[in-house]
Length: 86
Image 1 (cartoon, rainbow, N blue to C red):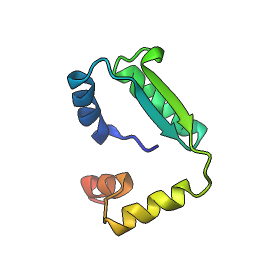
Image 2: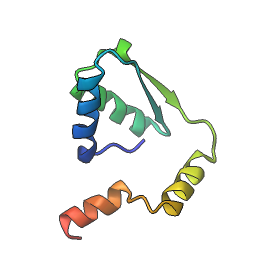
Image 3: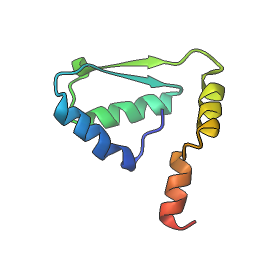
Image 4: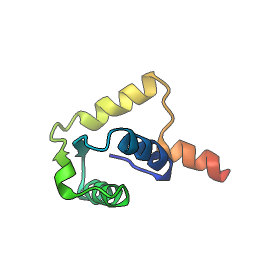
């Protein structure tokens, strides 16, 4: 899971609109899991309001990359580089 500053307005709006929804976050690494906890904390979520699960399919990242490439979806790194003028 990749979460950046750009995601918070969007996630905040979802949280505002549906405050009682149970969230599910998927992650690939321990670093991603920490990011999820930080996002949940920033959105003022209790631990009972969300669930985390690890992607165990080793092809998940490959599939994600293929979808991103086929649909020309800009990645976080590309957006950040553009934003910073790199």
